[in-house]
Length: 259
Image (cartoon, rainbow, N blue to C red; front, top):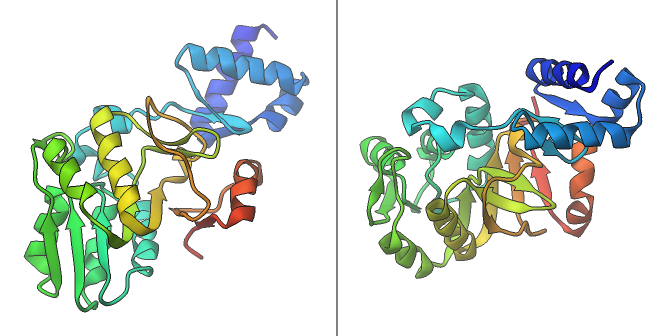
């Protein structure tokens, strides 16, 4: 089989399965794992895939190109699962930061039974939903210039306000999470905001679609820390979880809905 044919087959597999693993491809094509890694490296250079620990996935362009309103209709069930699980860590009297994301927007309905909770957010959509539906929540809207495509305040004014905060819990949605590369974002502005939020929290919770684990985006937010908790929509495959073994041994928690 020519290398181009093999690349086409690999791409078909990723489109069908969402992810491929090096050992599986090695057996499938009867070539060495090093050869498969070389294939994936070439395919990544061509923009066809994103390499992950032990395999590859399709490039994730959603965070770079789509409007908040468009992203809000993607993977709705998974986002609600993540949000429901994340909400179980919020307690009466907490002061929390909610990063502006379509997943964290779905935490709002779960806050209706809590008492004396203060929510700080840079999301005009989250703020609107809380203001409209939850009289029991004290709402603090971070100021600054609104970046309309993501419906968040993202500016120097926003950053300076966050830098003054010390809160109980922070919920952040990085574009990607990797043990090797840390947390990353597609824009400098968002990376600055998310980095400041991480520093403001006594406890930090990272929410992510499982397909964003093990990847990296253009802009570094911060290193991954063992004291963080990662909340995803389903269990990581063993080969992916191996990437995080050192962090897991040091205390990192990776949790998902028990369904």
